[in-house]
Image: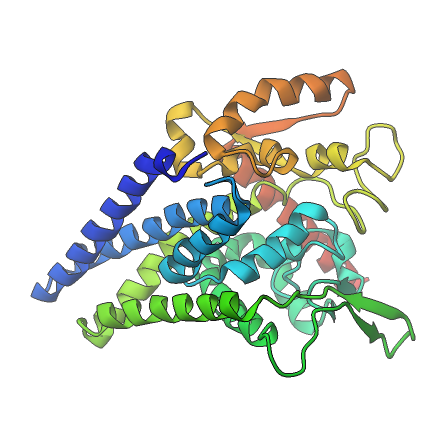
Length: 369
């Protein structure tokens, strides 16, 4: 792939940004509709740029991981406010241990969300280096998670901003911190647990991350300084609610699928056709990942995330080549009787909500047992 092959995506993103900013500034004449439409367009811009940032993080834009890392400063830090270094640290862990309840940070959201009943058993997060128990708050709210899921997705982006800043502080290339694995002792059991070691970037790379992230906040300051307080609040929340669609697109690919205890289906894995509790890496990708079926003309709206299985199997393949991989992937999995799940977007959402409702019901039983 080359950056020039992104011409349609780049033009679309620029149009969303330019028209969105124009409508937001036009709203100073008193048009709330203009403000809302412009803010929503900025949110969709965030989503579309995130698709390209995802490709850069996997090194599939230029084919050179070093060039794409610097592109990540623009696509991730400067244009979306999400640090490319933090994103890589969490996303690579997700790829290597998909739907592993102890190892995959993308499914570890206790006590706000719980996607699998085993997560209620004093979940240890190797990525975050802490226990995430089902506390009193979780018992109170998780039974209703299928109802508040979408509003939470609308504000989830603010958490990514916070995580990006914390990551940059923790990985600063000076002072005390090392990039090695940390040993943490569970005081209640005496067990020794390991926390994922965030590698330190070189000083020039880290400074690039910081400066580009500061650029994002400066541009936002310039925009909202042109608005009154009410318009600023509407702009920020409307844009971020619209951008929340991205979080939904990510989570529907895995939430309703199978889970394992750790690794890529290595321990206590659900759904393995042979009836065992272990699966190979490629087999586990099919068991823990679903595709979203849609016509080719809608691929732009999903940014390649609709081909999640193909992407997990070949993460450096450019997104516009993933559809051509589908028949090849189906052929090899059919040969070994491994199911491939591919459903429409609405059905994928229904399956996800049903999974969350089932877990919530199990927690209610647990609370009153």
